[in-house]
Image 1 (cartoon, rainbow, N blue to C red):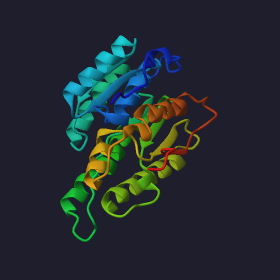
Image 2: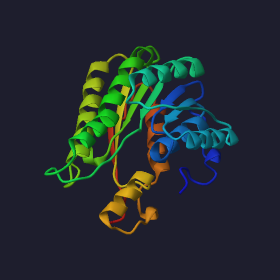
Image 3: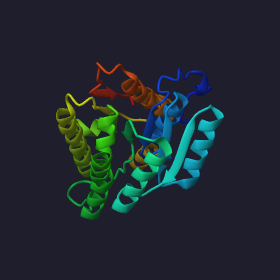
Image 4: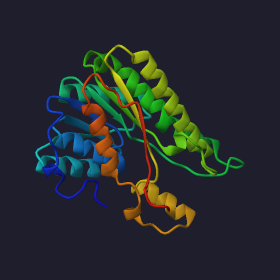
Length: 253
């Protein structure tokens, strides 16, 4: 599975030259595609995730296309590692003006016997970590009139059976974004939430496997489709804000 369309470097228009981004969950899937496209569009990107080898591969691919990605492995549930990540991002880029929250975990079990420990894990990654990282970087994002993008899920709009915990965290993440957008009004900071439906990512492949369904990624939204939306949001003129957008597969699954 590729994270970007063929010859993606030829599609870049360098709209983000001079900007700096931090992208979480960049080892695979949507986060990887987003970090790569931001870099190809001219932003200096710090990409973080838990898979060091995958992050190194991302940096190499960006470099081949003329982009700059600084990979940094981090566990965002650890406060000390978040602090180090923020410092590394500042040193690498000068001042972060784009923050993309793409890291997330998904667990599925009926509420009747779902593990509370797994609920705590999902809340830590899906809500607490992006909340805390945003709080840490908000002063410089405000100074830069920057962009904060939350990669949510359609489960953050309407919950399905079997994912009460995951959906609850995504509803909470939407509330964080909505409150922040209201608080940031007039400061120049823009807050966007993207709600992807079924997307061809390693996480979604595991979900299909758990559901006993045939995996056909070509029928799903692709990670680079989401990445394109992120770039569109952060490249808009300062007068416009893409607040929320839902993207779903066009084919019936």
